View 1 (tube, helix red, strand yellow):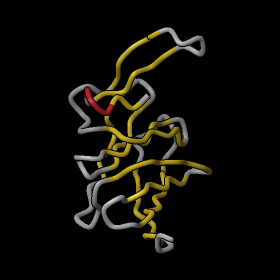
View 2 (view 1 turned 180 degrees about the horizontal axis):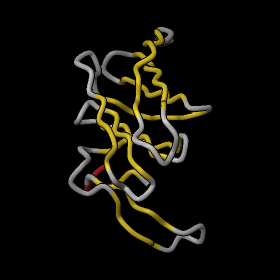
View 3 (view 1 turned 90 degrees about the vertical axis):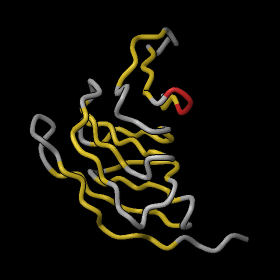
View 4 (view 1 turned 135 degrees about the vertical axis):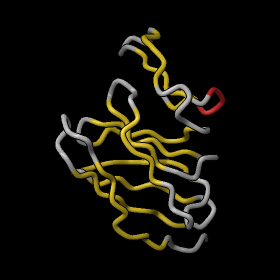
Length: 118
């Protein structure tokens, strides 16, 4: 769970029991979280960045692009991460490269223009 108010991730069992906190000191208002290629991709609302973490919470990489605004929800599939840019009304697409046991790299693929609001 992305614990927005406490700048950390919270891990719970399937039954709802608290297990542990992750990434304390590495996150600024985590908003969204997704698992991609055995890693965690976390969007930061205040950090205007995407963090790539090992499953134990160890920080692997930070992607902070000047054109990113406040980031929201994130989803992942087939090695690609998509994150909502709430400030700029865009969806950014990134690709995760590297095997799970190696240092990974997030690469900005391209921004996807969102449809105008109705």
